[in-house]
Amino acid sequence: MKTDYISFEDSGYFTKIILDYLTENSDLESFYSLYPNLYNFEHAIANKNFTLESRRILVESLKGQYKKDGIKLGNDGSVLTNLNSLEAGTTYTVTTGHQLCLFTGPLYFIYKIVSTIKLCQNLKSRYPECDFVPVYWMATEDHDFEEVNHFYTGDRKFHWETEQKGAVGRMKLAELKPTVEAFGSWLTDYSTNAEELKSLFEKAYLKHDTLAAATRYLVHELFSDHGVVIVDGDDSKLKELFKPTIKKELLEEFSAQAVELQSKEFAEKYKIQVNPREINLFYLTDNSRERIVKENGTFAVNGTSISFSEEEILLELENHPERFSPNVLLRPVYQDTILPNLAYIGGGGELAYWFQLKTTFEQAETPMPILILRNSAVWLNEKQTKVFRQLNISNEQLFLSEGVLMKEWVKANSAIDLELVGQKQTQVEFYKALEKLAGSVDSSLEKHVKALATKQLKAIDQLSEKLIRAERRKATTAQQRISFLKDTLFYNNGLQERSLNFSEIYLFQGKGMIGDLIHSFTTPAEDFLILQSEQQ
View (cartoon, rainbow, N blue to C red):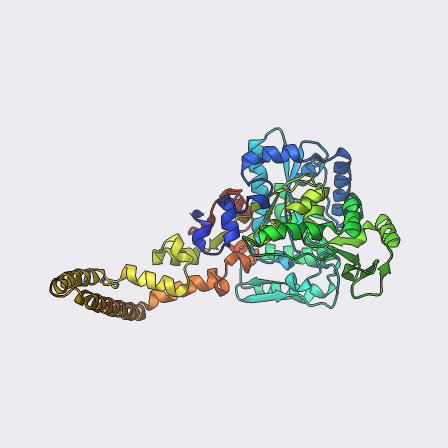
C-alpha cells in the first residue's frame, strides 16, 4: 500500500475552527486545556487524580459488562491485560466515542478507534513508565435511532426498521433478520473475505439480544488484538461515581450556566455549536429517554406524567443513579469522571462543541482531556488507484470539484496554451506602448486606451474559456475517469469516510485493513491520508 498526504487545509473539508486549533491560533487557546502534542501529556498525567477505589469499581464494572454481553476474555489477551492494568495508578486511558451505528456505520467509526490505538502506542514510547489503554465509549444511552439504523456500501443502503423507543443500546434485535439476510445476499457477488464479513455480521446481530451487546461483540472482534477496552456508560455502578455531579446539576443547573458563560466569549470568534438546557439530564427507562425539566420547584420528565419534588428526585438518584442520563454537554464530564482519561479523540464536529465545555469541566472539578482530531483518510482500491495514476493528477487536485478538476486536467494536457498566456502578454505590452503614445499627444486619451486594453483582455479570456470547453468535449476518456473517481470516492461531494462502510474496504483488504491503518496513521493527526492499494 502506498501512502500519500495532503494538508487538512488543502483538502477543503475542514472548518476554520479546526484549522485554527491545528495551527495553535491564539483565538482558540482559552477554550481547551492543553495543546495536542505528546509533550503536553506530561502535564495531563500530573493533573489526573483518579483514586484506586474508583479504579477498582471501574474494572469490576467493565468485567461485568463483558460477562453480561457474553464475551469471554479468558486468562490472557490484550483486552484482559489492559483491563487489569487499569487498577494500577500509572495506567491511563485515551478515549473515543461513537453511536452504535449498524455494522459500525460510516468508515470514520473505524478511523476513530484506530487513532486511539495509535496514540496509545505513541504515548507508551514517550512515557514508558506508564501504560495507556485505548477505550471505545459506546453511546448506548443515545435515543436518536435514525442516526444508527443504517449503513451504506457504495450506493446500496442497508437499514433496520423498528418501533422501539428509548436508549438505542437497550433495543432488541429480533427485527434485524431481514437486514442480515439482505447484506448476506449482497455479499454473494464477492469472493474474497465475503464469508468472513457475513459471519461477523450474523454473529453480532443474530447471536446477541441488544444493540449494545452486538456492538461490543463487533468492536471486540475487530480490535481485541490491539487491546481496545469497550465501555458502556449505561451502568449503575459507574453512575454511582457520577452521582455528585448529577446532584450538582439537579440542584444548581451548573452546566447551563457554565456553557453560557463560555459561549459568550466563544461567539465573538466562532459559531456556537450547542446550546444548553436548564438541566442537561435525561430520565432513562427501558422504553424512554426524556428530558428532566424543572417547573415551579417540581422536577418533571418531559412528555410523561412522572414528576418529583426535590426530596423525591434526590432519593431517586440515591437509589437509582442508572436512571439519570447525561446529554451531549454532560456526557464528556461523565466519561472523564469514571475513567483515568487523558485525551479524547473525535472528529471536527465533536471537537467544535467540546471547545464550549472547558468551564463546565472546571466547575465539575474534573480535568478536561486533551482534545485530539481523529485521523482522516481516503482509501483507493486497485481500480481507483489505477485510474488516479492514469490521470496523472496531484493529491490536491483529487479533492477539487469535478468541474474544476476537469478544467485543470484539460489545461495541463492540451497541446496548446489554452489560457493564451503568451497572447495576453503580447496585448498587455501593445496597449502599454499605445497608452504611452496616446498620452504624449493628449493625457486624457490614456483612460480610453486602458478601457480598450481591459475589453481586449476580457475577450481573450472568453476565447480561452471556449477553447477549454472545446478541448473538454474531446477529452471524453478523461471525463469518464474523473467522474468515476469523484462518484466513488466523494459521495454527494462529501468525504468517503463519512458515508462508506468499512466492509467495502475489508472485502479487498481483509484482516490486514486494521494493521495497515495503524501503520499509516500518525496520531495526533498531522495530515489527511491518501491510501492507494497496489496491484496484487
